[in-house]
Image (cartoon, rainbow, N blue to C red; front, side, top):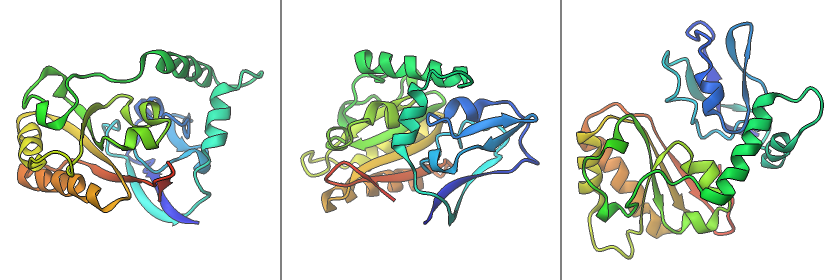
Length: 221
């Protein structure tokens, strides 16, 4: 299938391994001191590895690749067979931890209540999500909230212009990346528009992406 997937520039890669740690799916490994995409079907195309790379060696491309296989990813994390990578075992322990404690790193989470400046915004990967998306997508904490600062809202229920608050947050803090998670319903277009407008107003070159969740809890490519 034709889909978005990461591309690693080996000439730029210095083998620091930060992208390996940032990839929650275990799709990236180090081979001969260079980052490699080991399993295309493990790459979900969300790009958490992009802002982790200090050399800007990772980018997106559209090409033929196997579909993302979440079942295989979860199975690999549970694998304790001989020869399995210690990192996979460590990640399984993290999953168990998340089931108890979750991945929320900041408070408050409502966009309209969030401060304009806070210590947790420094070098933050910002997640701006429609509040329904966390209920629609069962693996929301591990998939989207991990290593992110989370802000949520509903443009249909809140009678506010999110773009003003988001503009102020982006302008007054060192934000590394912005991920928007929205539902496929039309009203969620408001939260996507607010983030795009905030990024435009900030005049900063910040990596950003939009992820859309279907009503039955699937990520829409």
